[in-house]
Image (cartoon, rainbow, N blue to C red):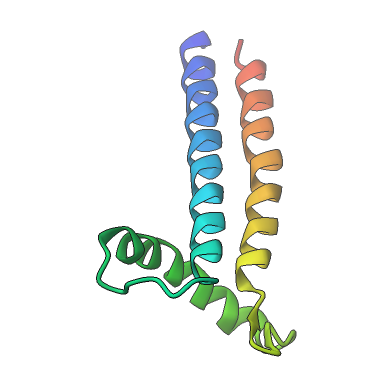
Length: 103
């Protein structure tokens, strides 16, 4: 059963790395909106295509309860970052504990 434990442990490491990279992508996408980016730039298009589906989902779900777009400031990246930080703490640690139970 140690193979299953190692597999789950590796999955937890990959998940943590993915969440960490996506956190930086969200930060960069939020920072790039402070300037006037060229919408035809491939980097800007990539950032928009990767983050906007998540941002729009947060805006639609939480926008009914909390005004996320007040005074010209979009708070959806902040909400996404908080969710990502929670997931970075919760999911990998839980998977590591599950992996330890298989060893």
